[in-house]
Image 1 (cartoon, rainbow, N blue to C red):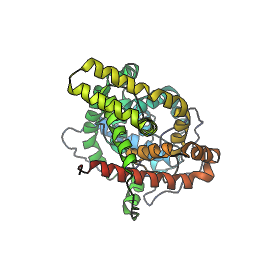
Image 2: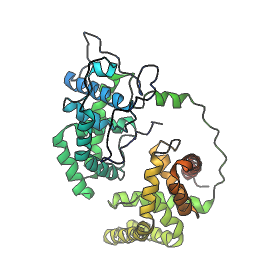
Image 3: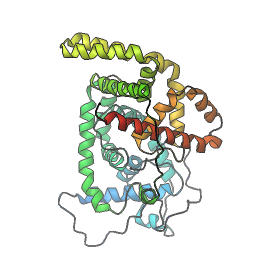
Length: 369
């Protein structure tokens, strides 16, 4: 599984590089170090040297800033490199006399200008199927997308008319991931996940606990997955926890609506089908009004808790199972009141729920008897 990238939660927070750098790995950085470029360098066909040099500077900047505990996003490092404000090889090596003054201020300005748009973009992308996988591929594709100021206009258009541009956005990011792939191969062994990914791969995998499948919960999950596909096709915004909660709290009415929608589609009564789909989506609104705020705060906190599932799909399933528990809101409130003391308990609980959810997903894929 690709490691989950740290994301900037509060762009307005002050940035300082005056702290002592965190303990480095054997190569000297928090990720696998980019070795000096040999000369002469023979590049594979299709590799643009200027783009490669900019990528190298972005990587040096990304690795350098991570040493100070700053939650740097790769697109930020790309933008600094594009503005010729990235970290030089000398600064990355820690040579004396090299000046990096002003870098924190430049990053602060960049965040004030672009972080709100990027935050909205990430929310928009959650509703798009067939994106590059979360982790390195998606982050590098976002870096390529946000490198050009001209592309910001396209992003603004996607966000302003989100229901019209889902496939265009997916196609664009898939294309950029394909463009970035050969550059990443040239830059190996560096990776965005760095030594953390290697350590995770080498760590012993826990033996999964046996999960007894409850048929009612399995049916609720099956309908939630069906509803997600429906709402994506209808371009209606939802979160998976909302769908799982709807199908848990209103399982019988939702079953009836699902049967009606299936029949309408089979009979090709498309106008009635679309109307009923919107009616079903309207049942999400009371759930969102009652639970949306605390779930948003809960998810935001959990993403920064060490030990929670890093895979986005597992994280999403774990949260969905957590919020539908009878004591889910009370448990979340207790943890959020004392977040530091609750972090380990929360990580262990969410991991158990994610593993339980995966067992249910596996059960969904089994052929019906």
